[in-house]
Image 1 (cartoon, rainbow, N blue to C red):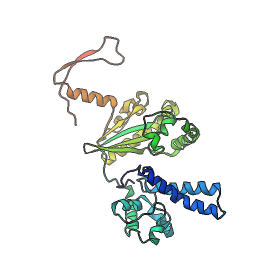
Image 2 (tube, rainbow, N blue to C red):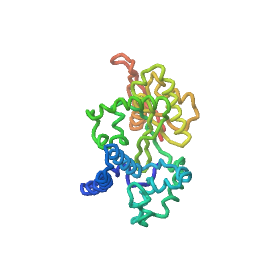
Image 3 (cartoon, rainbow, N blue to C red):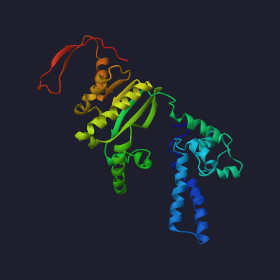
Image 4 (cartoon, helix red, strand yellow):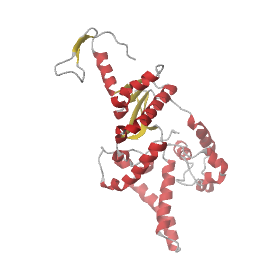
Amino acid sequence: MAMGLLGKFQAGHATFFEHIILGGIIGIPILGSCLLGYGSLTMIYGYVLIFDWLRCLGHCNFEIISHQLFEAIPFLKYLIYTPTYHSLHHTEKETNYCLFMPIFDVLGDTLNPKSWEMHTKLSIESGKNGRVPDFVFLAHVVDMTSAMHAPFLFRSFASTPFCTRLFLLPFLPLVFVFMFVMWAYSKVFLATFYNLRGRLHQTWVVPRFGFQYFLPFAAEGINNQIEQAILRADKLGVKVISLAALNKNEALNGGGTLFVNKHPNLKVRVVHGNTLTAAVILKEIPENTKIRVISPEAELGGGWWVRMTPVAFP
């Protein structure tokens, strides 16, 4: 569930001085344990990973901890902080300072009294759409290397133009495993969104990699994923859904005509890059202009002449 936080990448952005302070804060318990004779590599790595996980959890911009967990085990709400909890630190100053465990805000009397009430409210409403997108771009995963280029995996790597890095190679077996998990269980999911001229644009991703589109036995499953995405967009009231890359493969679904013919009463417009380009060109050409149309299969120099007629576009 998306929330009104300052930004989803803020957990990794800080000044040099802030990084020094945070490093010191993390180091105090580790140093204390070592001085008392209880230090170990497992303790150090475990503590750093848990601390960093909790810190990232509060900045992830999505509420993934259900209020039902806190209702079942009330004490957990003092050990796990959530994006709702941390957002109040930014919207209402002088509260919720702790970066990992709310219990320290309780001890310091800096706990915002609205923390649990707001978390419960947002958790209950997590299945509701605050705003229906105007346009959906239905993409898919290209390959295993590009999968690690997603913003929610490696932020610094994703912020640069696409390239392959040697440090990513050891992660390829893990991506390979996740590919099969996605193949077996995953559904179309929201990857990114942005607002342009007052219109909400979203990118949905079919959980399939590029090479899978060329496997004959995978075609039915892929088309089912695309069809469910189109029906979901239609149900939500999306105006346009564009089939990207191999999702519009002629051999797979006839450029989307398979779904349009199967569901003739669709309200959402199913398009792809080629049709959108043609629509833009047709809209710009004056009425009654004589143009030459050449099909991909035509002989060199072939084609036919047509005269433009008025066409209505949204």
